[in-house]
Length: 304
Image 1 (cartoon, helix red, strand yellow):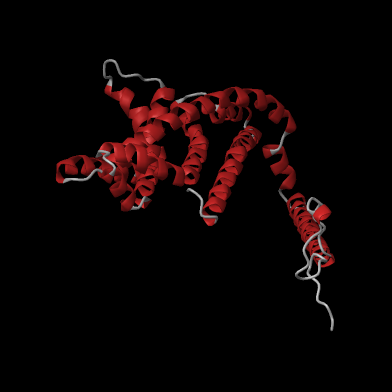
Image 2 (cartoon, rainbow, N blue to C red; image 1 turned 120 degrees about the vertical axis):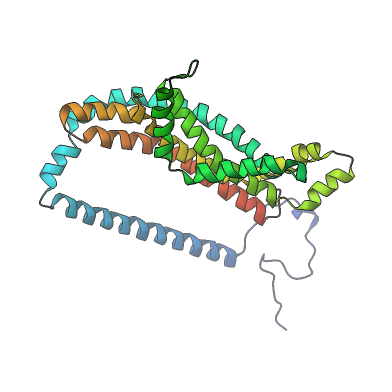
C-alpha cells in the first residue's frame, strides 16, 4: 500500500523525534514552487507596468514636442531663466501658506467639532442650536469659497468697523475657516452618527452622563473612523490657502503673479503649481496609508 506523506515531508501520524522539537521549519517542495511562481508573476507584472508607463510617457512627449505651437509654449511656460528667478520668491511666499494651513487647520477642526456636536444634541430644548448649526453648514457648503473670500477680504474693510482688522491674511484665514469648518462638521457628524446607539446606552448604564458618554465613548470612536476624510479636507485646505492672494497677501501664488505681471511670462505659475504639488503629495500618501491601515484593521475585526 502506498504511504501518503504530508506536505511538510513527515509521514501522517508520525510524532516528531525528541531532538527535532527545535529544528527550523523546512517548507515543502510544493510550497517553494508556489512561492517561486508568485514571485515570477509579480516580477512580470512589474516589468509590464514599467514598460507600458515608459511607452505612454514617450508617446506623450513626442505629441507635445511635435505640436506646432510647442516652441512658443516652451518659451512662455517653461523658461528656465524665469523659473530660477521665481523659485526663491515662491518658496518665501509658501511659508505664509504653510502657516495658514497650520492655524486654519486647527481652527477648522475645533469649530467643525463644535458644530457637529451641536447638530447631534438631543431634546427639543436644543432645537434652536441644531437649526442654527444646520443653517451654518448649508450656507457655507453652498457658498463658493472664492465668493466667501471676496466678501470677507474685501467687504469687511469696507465697513470701517472699529477694532476689526483689515489684514488680508487674517481675513483670508477667517474665510477659509468658515468654509472648511462646514465641511469638516459634516464629516464629524457622520462619524458620530455611525457609532451604534448601544455604545451610548452601555455608557449610560455604567453611570456616565450624556456629556461623559459623548466625550469618552462616542467621540473617540467617531474621530478615529473619520481620520481619512479629515486628512483629505486638510489636503484641500492646503491648496486653497493660495486663494488668499486675492486680497493682496504675498503668498506663493501672489509671488508668482508679481513676476508674471512684470515679465509677461507664465513660467512662475508652473513653478508655484509644482511647489504646491510637492507639498501635497506627502499628505496625500499619508492619507492613503492611514486609510489602508484602517481598512486592514476593520477587515481583521480590530478596533476602527
